[in-house]
Amino acid sequence: MHRPLPLDADVHPRSPEVGFAVAAKGFRPFFLLAASFAVAILPMWMLALQGVFDPSSYLDAMSWHAHEMIFGYSVAVIAGFLLTAVGNWTKRETLVGAPLLALAAIWILGRIALLGAASLPRWMPAIVDLAFLPALIVVLARSLVAARNFRNFVMLAVLGALFLANAAIHLDALGWLPGWRRRGSLVAIDIVILLVLVIAGRTFPMFTRNATGVASIRSIPILDALTAVGMLLVVVLDATVPDHASVAIASGVVALLAAARTARWGARFSFGAPLLWILHVGYLWIPIGLALRSISALTSAVPASIATHALTVGAIGALTLGMMARVALGHSGRTLVASRPAVAAFALVTAAAIARFVGTVVGADYYRTTVLAAGTLWTAAFALFLVAYARILTSPRVDGKPG
Image (cartoon, rainbow, N blue to C red):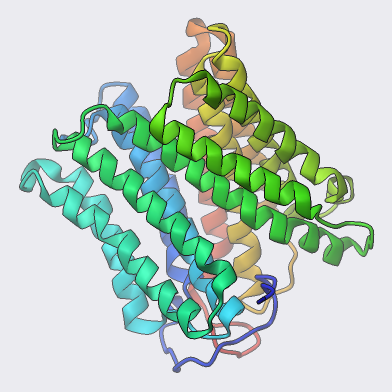
């Protein structure tokens, strides 16, 4: 069995010399693109809510927003993370240089195709957007297969499932699979949460133990396994019987498991270290979101959207921001200490999640105001991340090592 190395371990797979720093490691272009896209997409969405801007003639505005937050922003972060992590796990470089930039260009073309769909043949946005995940799977599979790293083949399965969810959304847009825009987006969120649950169990206790020196911090393997299996069941149920009572039951059980598994993670020791607390706080939104999903199925007093935004703005937003900050520091040869702009970004993305949560609770009178507030806070958070990290992502490692 291959035990994964921490993402901030000083491991450098053999790779060709790369003169252009942003193409020297997978996290560099994709984290830069993800953060830039995060800054752009929320203002675009807020303009769409005001009726000023129509984001897509291919998908309706709400479906475009959901699609791009998942398959635009989230998938870009996942790509940067896995291109870097698989290199660590296999000690084989995944992609650097011009091929890495070409992969990033495929992602960019997908975003352009959906925005410019009115000027393209009806089928072209689907072809262009769907090209990215298979290309990423091939790149990662080469390293995993060559290293016989079977444990991490699960990452390929997750990416394959995301591709199928994306394909279902596009087939709906083309009129071939009606009703799958919402279901495909819901399943895709589930898949991203499943990936986060797996990675969190592998890394968060280790990060916290290493930083604090508290030896009792550890994962609980049986709860890790049960949580992952339970979330996989939620994925399957949402794909097959999305409105069945079994989805509410499964979501509630996974919420309890996801919370219980953190008992030994040492969250209480993390609050003096922003690179740790943002991960623990972000993770907390997962059991909250899943519990709200369960409750919303039982009473109309709790709308389903509140659960969705707890999982997306709260969990995915905070956790991706925290992991990008940590990975960028570790793999650029820098000390794992968050700068003031980064800490402010962590606070703002957390505030955005709270504002989005409150906006759903307070009712229609304040709904639009709180949505605009949440969007503004989110945009500011990622703008600050770019202030803190753009130079790091585009400059060579400070220790002179490759990557």
